[in-house]
Length: 357
Image (tube, rainbow, N blue to C red; front, side, top):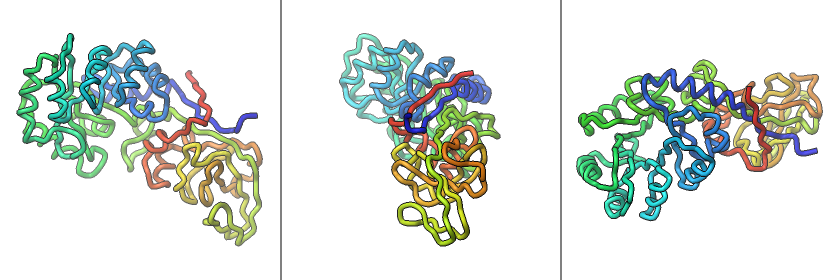
């Protein structure tokens, strides 16, 4: 028998979540963000399930090659652009659209000898201070890009730092509009949070990411209330049951001490499977269809579930770590992180199962 853990992927949830994004996107086209192996969901699995997206946004040239070799003919956006002059030959051959966020990339484009000009996204740093051209260099960069024979078509872009938070997008929108000052170029601004919350950011192309995988970009609003469905469900089983007396401890470091008689289920899932090691006692988990909590410290291959309130659960009882009955957002919040990290951390050793209905 194989180890009783698996990640199940609901392909219909991909399609549902893409439809939710489209309904919010006004008239904008949709880049489905599939970077980081589609947030741990499998690049080809995600792109094939979301074949109705207008294009796919990712980071690595290798991932773009995989999509083209798999017959994916939709536009592909390289979110970090190209890194050296030699990359541009691949960009041209595969018909990719790179993000240009630095003057050095414009220099590479100026020196490139491309047989076919390429479209680019020119990115402004409107306040996040991660990637993007400084406002003081914007006019120079745009002017040079427009004059390059290697460039065919420019879309303007920025990225919001706090669309999911209290500050929102107003200040970054003000800076973007002030620097861009019209010009008639198409624009791409909105990530998942902005797409859902700020219609004024929709522009010509939106770039949803986490919402496509069924998680919420907002700490205070669940994915379910937004109308999203989880794609990934991480499942396992109880492989042993322990009966603790008051005062007994469990796990490495004995970080949980029973205050009363406690039934503990040992679950075949640990941090080597992608479950967060820092998830504390009390992290939600579902055993035999009933919600309960984790206990103690997560091990490499196992963790502990409180079975005291689940009297019928014993060895082989089904366990949901996150997904359809307990959201990855809830688990992430308990662990002091975000669902993005949980999904991307799914280990290669976990068997993967597809379901579509």
